[in-house]
Length: 269
Ligand code: G3P
Ligand code: CA
Image 1 (cartoon, protein in one colour):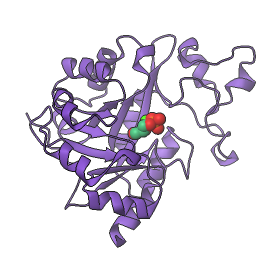
Image 2 (cartoon, rainbow, N blue to C red; image 1 turned 120 degrees about the horizontal axis):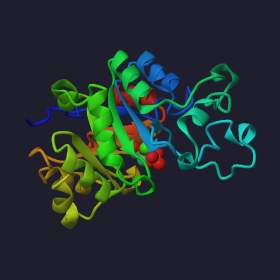
Image 3 (cartoon, helix red, strand yellow; image 1 turned 180 degrees about the vertical axis):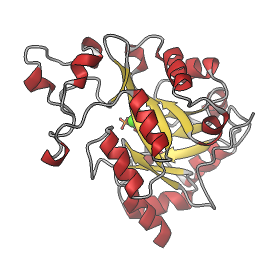
């Protein structure tokens, strides 16, 4: 079946919360997606990686240091790579107090818990497979985890999930395992290369600095892996005027640390 996920509604691009709403709550935590839900933001973006003992967790950096208290709790284990720590060790970390005392005790979410919360909040997910070269086989594992969590049923596949990556080989691998799930390539391939990406992707999601009206037209002119025009979501845009300019260029989504600011700007736009 052809997924019906369509980012742009009634012509206006969708504002997607980058790692949740990190201007209001610590990135990639449950608190951050709850904040998005409170603001009426439906789509959130996250980053998925793997622990030493094979658990999928939600974190952006490949090391624990910036967004947890790993340095204090595990001195002597620099550089605190996620892949060197077990899930039990990571779950002892505080992923909130670095951001603000109000979030003390926030944990690094497992992908399973994160998916449950997105569902509970009736939100949708732009899921990034982060640094897949560090985690061989993560694509197949991700598909299995999504299935166990109930995220590969018709409803989720049709309207709630896009898997994205900077790695074309990783996206291809995921597409081989689950061709029904929409995927997005993070980057800005040359127009002449778009067709080769369209074999395994439904979106091309570039840094907003690379976006022009001509580029958006070129991307939209190519049909993606599910037979619909390739979509474009630009990142990471926190300025309302820039969001309006991108909307005029025709982008389908705008990934933002302050999605509520972007929504307001687009409404006034
Ligand atoms: O979703 C786009 C954006 O998240 C890619 O960059 O480094 O924030 O994962 P990064
Ligand atoms: Ca990301």
